[in-house]
Amino acid sequence: MRHPSADEIVTWYTSVRRRTRLVAERIPETLLERSPAAGRFTPGDLVRHIAGTERWMWGENAQLRPSRYPGHAEELARGLPEVLAYLDRLQDETSAIIAGLDDAALTARCETVGGVDMRVWKWLRLMIEHQIHHRGQLYEVLGAAGVATPPIYGLTEPEVRARSQ
Image 1 (cartoon, rainbow, N blue to C red):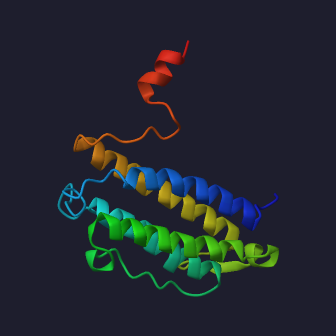
Image 2: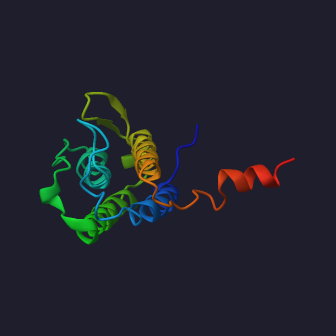
């Protein structure tokens, strides 16, 4: 099986990032630090968690270093403008790390924070799945609060149904 190149991973990551950013931009300041239930991430926590894990866990592990994940506390970025800037900055850094990986680095084996040994390119694929998972949580939290969210691929479910036969 051929593994993706660093350029292919960055292209995919950039596309996923764009869709996540569009949802994150819709978080009202009044909901940013409000947890939907006891022990659950706030929308701000989710965005900080996505950014922090990608840069300080996946980015470090991809370079064969241990995780340096700082958590998702509000102290890392307060208010929506800071949270979005934190997301952008850490994801830009992660993109640069990925772009700098050659074929040998992508096929090298890294140890994940959970102690699993796997190829770097597979670990980066899981990073993207992780982001998508948390983007889904943002959609749910915002939807439950009545916040309009962008359709993920350009059409809403009713529009898809109306265009289907």
